[in-house]
Structures are given as structure tokens and as C-alpha cells.
Image 1: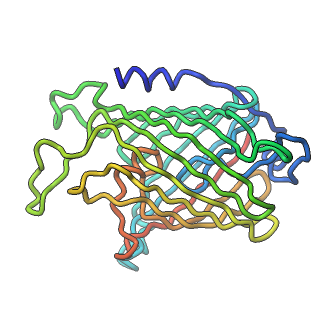
Image 2: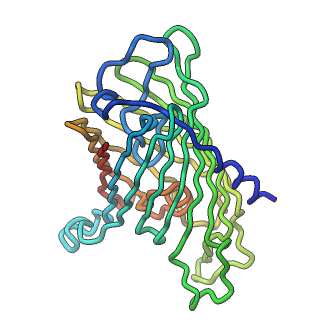
Image 3: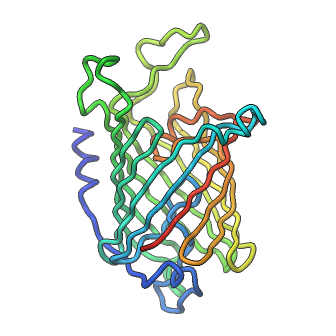
Length: 292
């Protein structure tokens, strides 16, 4: 019943318009529903409240390299990268759909983002956007998991993205999140034995927080953090923390950052981040966004 419910949430797709990416990078309009808190589709890892313009196609290439702590041994992690390729399309004004493929778990994900209400200059103080996705983990092979069925590969995500453009420099966002993994990863005890039954609930909740501070006309510093609220106490996974900068140029946005999360889809970075900032387990990464 729970899985069917989240599948239903993934059905709606609608719309938003823009002439080009540069139009949206320009000055904020002065009508009541024109306040844009973010310039890119993501803050760093978390989705922002920005949507793709109606009829526009965004191409996104995202990389997360290995941890920098190994130094020149693997050239600060650059020898080992996880890549995500994504296409995001504006169906109509107010709704974006996307399809993506990630090297992490060899995962495919389908998603939609839809505006519920906009921040107004002299009215409602927030922008609220819904986000839903479904991820398919194709890394689990039949020979190692002989009883696996297609449903076991699926994870469902639902988020409410709530942002406010505080002033011309500062924008902030909260992202309460629910996601359901049909199969959760094994958790090991101190002797590296699998804990049975798995103490981690399939249904998990998290709270994302993020923001953007404009440094100059085309530069900003961005940060986001995800607090997992019902992680099993025996789990070794960590909360994702990411800090970086955005550069707006020509027809694209280039985001560069440091993060302890190598996964780029929601259930991956929220539920399966292993890096520890205090141990130098930090990855350099970037998101490159291009509009067609």
C-alpha cells in the first residue's frame, strides 16, 4: 500500500517558462510572483526551488571524485570519479521532469518538480515546490541476489522544498524529505557480521537545509546539509554536508564544491553517505548545467 501511494505521487507533470538560461540569471522582475531564490536546479546536492522554463531542455553533468585525503596517491581522488548524466525538461510553466543515470549503484532515476506557490514581493513570503522521484538500482546482480525482483531495486522519494529569498544576497531553503527503500543495505556489527534483522526502517525521514549567498554579480557561495532523522543507531552512514561556489557564465551554471557524499540521487546521498569530514573523507565535485 505504501509503495502504491508513493507511485501515485510520481504521476503529475507540469510547467515553467524561460527564453534562455541567461534570462533567468538576469535581474529579478518586479511583479508579484517573480522572486527566484536560486539560479541553479540544485543548491549542491539538494534540489532547489528553481524549475526549468517551459519547452527548455537542461543537460546536467555532475561529478564526485574520491576522497582528497589520499593526496597524490590517487591525485586527491581525481583518479576515481562517480558521474551522473541528467536531462531536465520544462513541460509547462510550473513543472519540470527529469531522467538521470548515475554511476553510484548504476542507478536510473525519474523525477518531477512542481511549483505549489511562489514568493511574492508584497504577499506570500515563501516559494514552495514539490519534488518526487523514483530510483532504480541496477547494481544488484541476479547471480549474487538470486531471489531479487524488480520491486527490490526501487526507492521512492518525496520532498517539500520551501525557500525564501531573504534579500538580494541571501536565499535559504528547508527540505523535509520522506523516502522508502524497498531493500535497505546490510548493517554490520563491530565484528563485521551482518545484523539480523536489519535495524534500519525501510521508510526514512530527513530534513535538508541549504542556502546561497551572492558574493558578486555571477558568483555565489552555496551550502546544504541533510539530517537523517531515523537512522539506525548501529549504522555507519553519515549526514551529507556540502559547501561550494556557483559561477554563472554564458549559457550555463558551473557549480564547484566539496562534499562527503559521492552519490547524487536523493536516497543515495541521504541514506548512504560514508564520508566523514573530520577524517578528511571529503570529495571534490562539480555540477555543470547547460540549457538547449
